[in-house]
Amino acid sequence: MQFEVIYITYGLNWSIGVSSKKNIGFQGEGSVILQEIALVFQGNIPKFKLGFLLDIFTFVYEKALYVKSTRTVPYSAIIKYTNLAGVHHIYYRLPNGKHCIVKFAMDKMRDDEEFTSKLEEYINSTKSFI
Image (cartoon, rainbow, N blue to C red; front, side):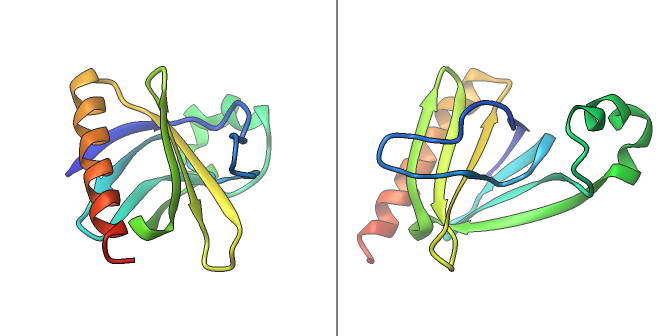
């Protein structure tokens, strides 16, 4: 199942019980794909760290400033999932033990509910194998 999303890069990257400081890095529009064994994030990652200047030049130089990328996160690596006011927060563990976060929002409320229920179903079924 594929869901169109908008990645969120602003705000605090912490939560109670999870010391997460690293954002996944996706910006703007992208997609989240729920597969049976993993979540797949697709989107644009900036090639350069330009801060607010990146937002100004995005419309004109999008292909020069961003590179399309994919990140696969197994359900067993997900530490915590929350949905706060329509913004999904997924905290996960990298193979080296560091914690990361990805934040995104969806346009449609129906997609929000469907995504949440499917994700929780896949996470719970994965926990039974661990």
